[in-house]
Length: 310
Image (cartoon, rainbow, N blue to C red):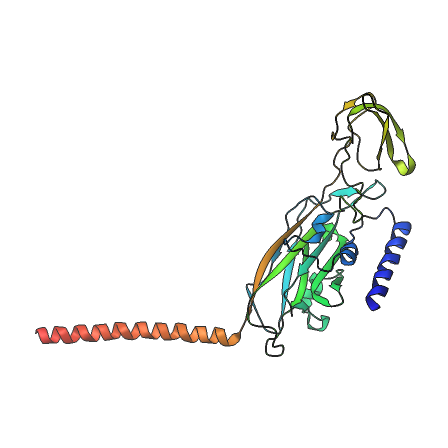
């Protein structure tokens, strides 16, 4: 029941947002939350890529190893050219926005704010973190955020303590990271957004180009020996054809206005047992001492042999 209420609130929020601020450059992380129980498919693909078709590089920095019950930073870098603007839902140019998703191993989660250092507080100012679902606190979402100020997003992470949770063990764990900049090219319903190029469904001659509702363009296309068809282009993309042009099936009618993209990667972190570190240091000390003793013993033998030779 609680989850049903949460999903209903998300739907109401979305409807209000689209009515009140239709020109905003929205990212829709809650659409993924509503449609996918797990944001990472069996193939390893993060589901954000189903709507954000363009690919761009995403980087991540995590410590090589962390201790039990400790706070560390996972930094997601979402690089793109500064001051880049994209096409909003109303066709106007708007600042590019960014978002990120971090899938942590079981037991790892967002660190409570009372354990954040002053440095972490400064680096996360203005950033709001949400977990993917109520029962998945190891999957953390951020966004949409203004891109110019958030090309690096810091996630404060709390590591688990295997001494308190017997289901957790010391060792190496995988972390899956996704980073996005800009709006998607496809809505979850399967429809194209206006942040995409549009192509002719059939070949023919363009008879007319008219203005439709909300700034859309209505192209009347006459295939040979067939009735005319209508191609509706939403506001945003620029036409690359004109009246009288002959086009082939699949030929682009507009440019591609998308300037963003999604990227993902996998990284690793070691949950380190301090006793293992101490044991390793003792082992190294033992090996070093053994080598020293062997050298001393060798010299002692050489002296004895030299004395007997005399």
